Image (tube, rainbow, N blue to C red; front, side, top):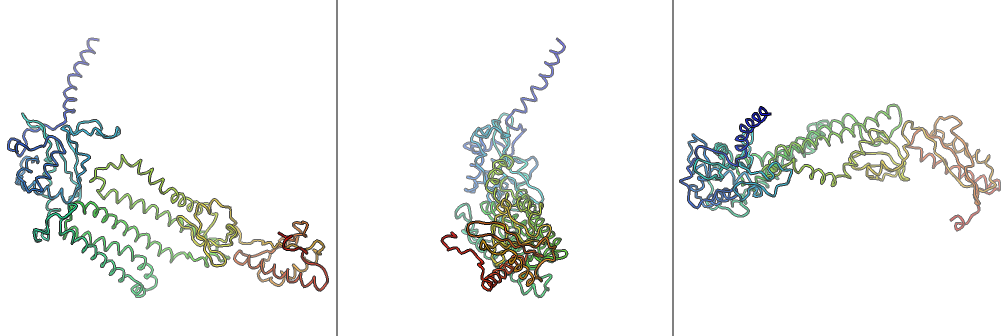
Length: 546
């Protein structure tokens, strides 16, 4: 026991200094450059908020000597502190939006309002990230560190590692030759942190981008497509919209990089928009070109796919599968593009949001808002997988005889035999019972139901039926005799219902053939009844029939 107690005491003695050191809410340094003793006596830098407020105030007053005392220069840095203060102010003003909610007005920098699942909840901080700014091929951080020199109180200063990157950041984002050549009044602040020259340059840039977009669209218009030929013409026309977006985005990006260096208010919105523009242009071009190529390989025209014959079933299935694959590719492309935009744009990082912390809430909100859209997308893919309806199939939906023209993300487009179009939400189409006349076998039997008088001779009706079928023989199926027939299917006080079977080769002409057979049976029955003196139809008044 004594041995264990001694070992425990030894381990505790070794670990306690390490734990105490880890809990120190500041970095111990040998010295701070510029020296703290040279700073103005009224300079406040004991809290993160006070340091940033003082630095921005000094910058607005062009007091770079005082602002330099809020920097912690790395050892061996040869740049003038006042010049570094000016450069840092310019970079912060042009590339960042300060998130003041992260800057606590207390010496330990602890965020007492942070949620319990936050990594810094209830913990003193000695380093705070203000911004991440892209430099060449990687982002660099602008941080505040709490530093303590010997025989001095801890103070919050801009970190030495951040100051080391300031000259390169200023060269990339500082005032360029164009801005330095402007008169001083145009470089003054106008409103919302914008300078007067920006209020003029931004509308001009938007107008120039619009003009470039119109020019690109005209160059890739129909006339140019005809010159390139019909095959390339479809691809060129498909590339027009992506090309316009790419041209406009490129113009704005080049202007913002080499001509105008906008303030942080504009840059905060412009940077993610440029990234989004490039992603949309590339992905839209990919989808459009693939669509144009698919149109060359597979016909999606309803008239071509509704035809019945050898290979027609395979054509409908292929068109449906390709349409489903296209929808799936669009979903994947959209998700990839969304991920690229989030990974490249630094809006969330600049504003200090934690994507991981807010992912749950964002997912719930987006899922609820898009629940119907997502449900329809899944239902459209379900139709393609279970083959309940294919593009070109003839269906009887909600009393309408129609063919399936399109199966889109959120709706099914049906073409009624009269030429009208039904637009049905995919969920409704899937949940509703419908007849598919083309599924498995295009052959089908249509029925004609007619009400006759009680004493009508059914054998005579069978003769009339055979005569009517003989007159439309070229439109009927070469079916067995079992698929033809006349039966009494029902009877009531008014008369008896007779069912006539009409075998049809394919569904595209089945309905019209049945109508023609009905017309001939009625005409022949009335004529035979008049000639032979027997009653054909029930002698019922309209009121009694109702």
